[in-house]
Picture 1 (tube, helix red, strand yellow):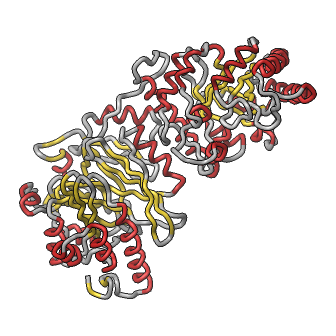
Picture 2: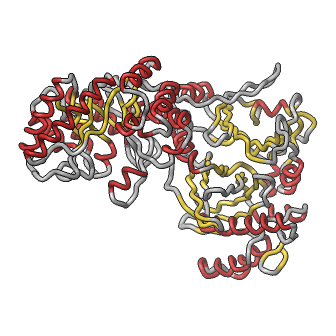
Length: 620
C-alpha cells in the first residue's frame, strides 16, 4: 500500500516537513491545517513544492464540530466548510477529514446527523471533494467507528465515507473486526498510531502519548489486516501526536516513521488470512547470541586491566588494526583504538550471531536502516552491519571456523582459548545482556529498531529511582534469552554508563579472584544487606558471603540472581552475574543501589577524594 504521514507528526516548518518526508521515501502527506495557517507559502506554492518532491497531498485535516447541531448552527458550519473545501482544492487535495462533534453537538440522533452530512456531501461534491467522517474517541455523541459508519451509510452520498483511526478505535477498546463489514470504497482514509497502555483520560492520551507502530501495546498488524480485507486501497497514513517527536530532528523522525510503516505492513502481511495487497519484506532472523561486544577508546589499557582481573584471556592483536581481543568461554570483548582520538572508553558496538546475515541485511535495507561499514583487507572477514538509533554499531556474523567465529583467526600473538577453564573454575562464560543508555528522543526509535530489524520482543518497561530522577529501562530480548539488550533512558542531562553483563557459574569465585588481582568492585552500603535480611530472610552465612564480596542479590519464584559491578571506566562498566535456577529477570530493585553508589564514586572522583573503595564505614 502507499505510505503517508500527517505533518503534525513532525517538527519544523511545513516546507521542512515536506522535504523530510520526501527524503525518507513517503509517497504522500496529510496537511494539518495549523501547519498551513502559519506558513508564509500559499496553498498553490505548497502544492507545487509537493509536486516537485514527488509527494501526493492525500488529506486536509481537520474540519471540526459539524454534525448533530441545531439548524441555525448548521448553516454557519456549511459556510465554514465551503471555505475549507476551497482551500483543499487550492492545495490539490481531494479528501477532507471531518471529526465527530465534541463541542457543539446538541442532537443525539443518527438520522439528523446523516441528513446534515448529506448536506455537507452536496457542498463537497461541488468542489470535487470527498468527506471522510471520523469518530473521535471523545466525541460528544459519536465516539465509535461503527456508529460513524452507520451515519455515513445513512447519509447515502457518494462524497461521504469514513476515516478509520487506530487510536480512536483501540483506545476505546472497540473490536476492529467490524471494519471488514464496511465496503472498501467507503473507507476514504486510514490513520495509524500505536500507544502505550496507560490509564488516563483519552484526550490527553491521544494528544501527548501516541507512538509509531511497533512501539506501543496494540496489535496494529491485525488492525491493518482488517482494513485490507475490507478492500481498502488508499494510503496507510501515520497520525501521531507526541511531544518528543514534535521537538526532535525532522528528517530523523520522518525516517523513523517510514520504518514503522514498512514494518507494520510486513507484519500484517504475515498474518493468516491477509490479502496479497499487503507487501512483505525479507524474513526476520532473530539473533541466536552475542558474537562480541566492542569497546572503543584512545587508550583501552584500563579496560584491559579490568578484563584481566575478571579472569578473561588476552587472545591477540588484530593483524592490521589497533584492535585487541579478550575472551572467556563464549564471551568476547573487542578493544578498538582505531580512529578514537580523545575518546574515553565506551560501548561502540555489538556483534550478533545470526543464521543468515544476508537475510538480516536485506531486511535492514528495506527498513531504511543506516549501514555501518568497516574497511577490510585481503583475507579478512567482511561482516554486514548497521547503526542503531543510539549510535551503537551492530554487526552480524553467520560464519564459524572450528568452535569459534571465523574473524577470531585475524588476531595474533595472544593466548589460545581454553574452553574448559571457565566451566571448571566457574568463570565468565558468555555475555548475559548489554545495557545501552540513550536520550529520551532516541528511545522509541531504538525500541522499533530492535523489534523491526532484529525481531526482538519487548517485555514491560520498568523504572528505577536514581539520585537524579527516574531511570526507565526497556529490555529487548529473544524468546530464549540468549540476546538481551536493555535500553535505558536517564533523566535529562544525566548520562549513566553503558554496561556489559557477563554471566558465570560461580560469582563468588569470580569476585574473590578479581579482588585478589586488584579489582575494587562498586561499594555496596551495609544498609542494603540489612534490607536483604528483612526482605528474604537470608541466613547469616549467606549474608556474610554477600557482604564480604559486595555482591547484590535478588530472588524470584523461579530462582536467584547474584551479581556485582566494576567501577566506571570512562563511559562503561562491567557486571558479573550468576543466574540460579530459572531466574530470568534483572533485579530491578537493586538498580537504585548501583545508581547511588556510582553517583558517590563520581562525586568523590570529581573532588579528588579517595573514598570509592569505602562503604558503610568499612573497606570494601
